[in-house]
Length: 323
Image (cartoon, rainbow, N blue to C red; front, side, top):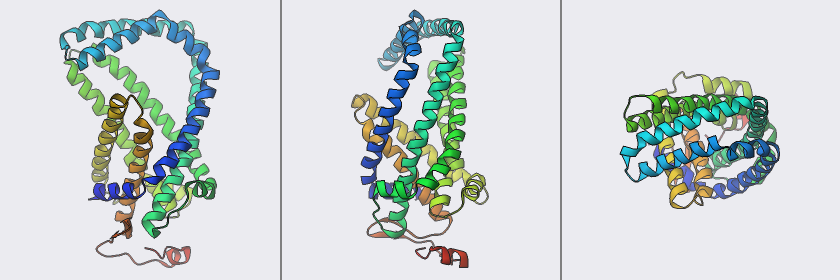
């Protein structure tokens, strides 16, 4: 039921996707330009190396044969990819200082870009919350400016934690991929295990942090209290939330891959911002349901808890009378 309500909330706020898209495109353009200027010399040498091109050819052939069903040739291509990978690592070791500096610069650019994108996610969350609670249609830019202080502090805390987690997962997935290629397991079992680990890692992060934004925006908590509330799992039915997020992650992954392949990437302009919007919608639906707060999923439907929780004195004077 939560997933169904989240989908209705997502559709009800679909117009915010186009505003978030424009916001993200501006950030991507600026960060991409800075990245090209700072990291391009090293990337150019790396991409132009024979080791990288050999590995790339092997990966392309691997994927092509996989899509064409030519499973018999995958073992040979797998060995080619592994050999090229070893040579690439040796190449990086010979240019270790430049590689480390390029990675650090790239990481800094990613953190700054994610911080700005987080401001857009915060504004999107506020717009969705206002629609759910009050049926108020707030402007994206005005909401972004109005919540700039709170959003900046939130992202200053959340983004470094998220980036560290993502980097750890990417490094682990990188080594896991080549470990699986070296294993005796059948290829499709290796691929299944790899995707399973990726989905679980993303689902776990979403589950643990899902209450952070709603606690700040709807619960009107301070940053420290909202963070504590998010990481506390007491009475939160964690397994149910995690299972819903797993379904959302799989659907988002499938839609984005379909948009990438079937539309040559053009569909990603809609599916990527939509992915964030559906996740935020579910976070707020989950929060409203658990806190027993009534909310609107469209202009004709209001979801009310079986027994509405009365307002405390603090909540009343804080302006939470729309519960």
